[in-house]
Length: 154
Image 1 (tube, rainbow, N blue to C red):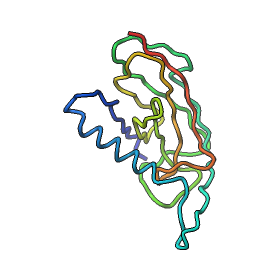
Image 2 (image 1 turned 120 degrees about the horizontal axis):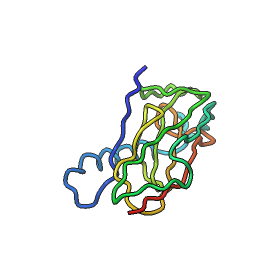
Image 3 (image 1 turned 90 degrees about the vertical axis):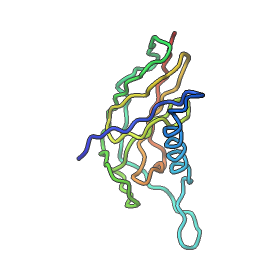
């Protein structure tokens, strides 16, 4: 199984070099925002499955303070009751999926590993959320996420 990590930089306004990452984030958000319910041939919504996964953010800790004008925040997550799978599929299993990482309610990474980095976090208070999602990029029902508040001081 691949432990490949996919991360995206947090967009910095006015930077031409970020056109591709911005497009990638927009595409990821669109893929994840298609809705929380699938529809059958009769257009009747079907319920999303629940998951057996349990998440815990090991680091950063809630309330942790980082110093700098632009900080790369390392993330380490404990996942039990499920495994991360590298392939996207419509074959949904409650014990398989991957992680979506959000900073202040904006998706910043799709991780196929339990560790990663959120790059270029600016000064201020931030909510870092990690969610275990199904192989089709959509959330389980109920959603399985954990979050911490971090602060970056210049």
